[in-house]
Length: 173
Image (cartoon, rainbow, N blue to C red; front, side, top):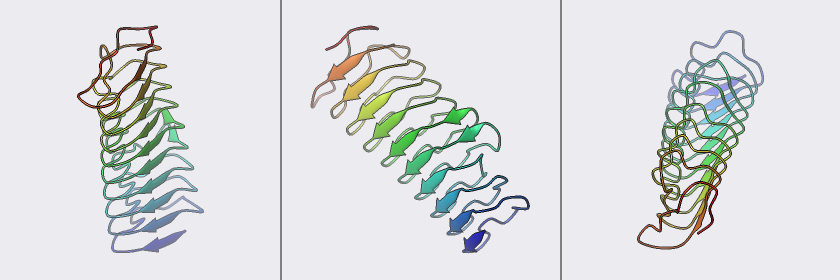
């Protein structure tokens, strides 16, 4: 393990191959091959093979059931708790409350910020995917593009400006 910064990897006892740079980065890490860079990035640790870069990125990523996640940006995937695998969140507060979803890709400031348990969601653009929480299989492309409901499934919405909203599950707009 490599730790640089006050309290980086502080409570770590069983990990290997980990890297933490920054104040309390990886503070509670318990598993291996994680990279945490930034103030309290990966603060509570997490399962194997996670990357968190930025202020409190993957901050509350629980120590069970999470792995292969990438969070880059201040507060990206900050509230991830358990059973979250193979997610990519890039941007300020992207996937901010994503707790248990799998296979999500959210790129842009606040993209997918309300997503909690939805899976296989793609949100690209500033605030893309606004309103989606538990839906699955949706694709939201463009700034402020919104889901038709919090649980919309298999919805494709493409647009720009002033928040175009989807038309319901299994639709393209």
